[in-house]
Length: 161
Image 1 (tube, rainbow, N blue to C red):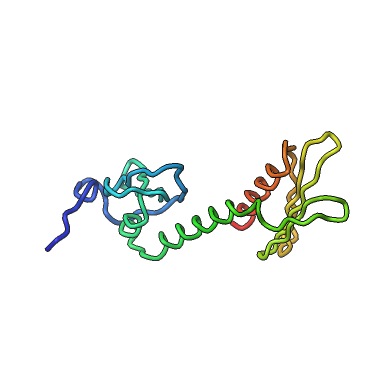
Image 2: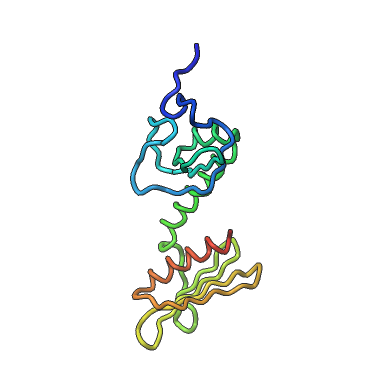
């Protein structure tokens, strides 16, 4: 027995294959997949097709079929889930205090983060990629040390890409 197609899967004007993922994000609240129009999604795969005028935001299962790749969408979503979990744990990690009194953290994946208070009372920081010997020092001043730590987390994600 053939499965009943739902949503845009049953629309002959919508391509079913040949889509490319142009990004994936975690949504703040559940949404509905724009392809099957039935699955509730938390992780949104942004899909583009040269013969379709709009980008579709879909769940992992539809992305697999649209790309004809059953590994890449799952891997993208897993990386995003892991980064989200790491972000939630970031502030509670074992931040140590240097001889100068600055908070610092060395990550297992080769980054060194230092957070300090400026003379004006604001907060700054620096991320060093130990593998590639790159440094990013915050130009922006933050109101709290936690704000600098979260900015450092975002910088590390960018450096990893």
